[in-house]
Length: 125
Image 1 (cartoon, rainbow, N blue to C red):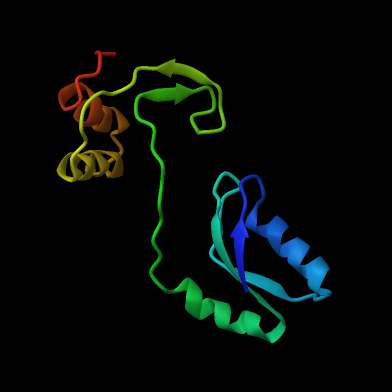
Image 2 (cartoon, one colour):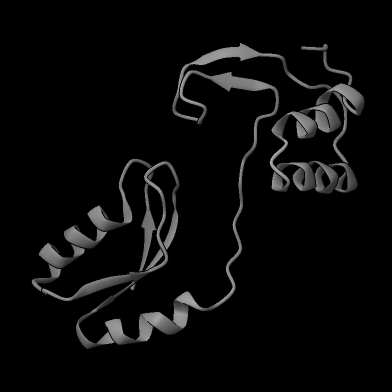
């Protein structure tokens, strides 16, 4: 079964609802979506739950919407905006890959420097 999970519900909450609606004890899902994420949740009922392990091992693709130069009080999209520096200009794939490399190395500040200060002309912090 394929479920389009809405924002605000955890994967477990969706599973509980399916369990109740289907009148089944055994309901499972392949992968987990955060309550702050919407998207496709692959689910199985009854004996079909055994197949989920094979789906979880498959490659996945994600689509994300990113807003650069904005800080919130909770450091996620759900918080109140406390600062909005903004960025101007074009963002090339090469620049984005370079910035993501900085994030992977644990340097969010380095990514901001690459994305906003140097390439997009944002104001200095």
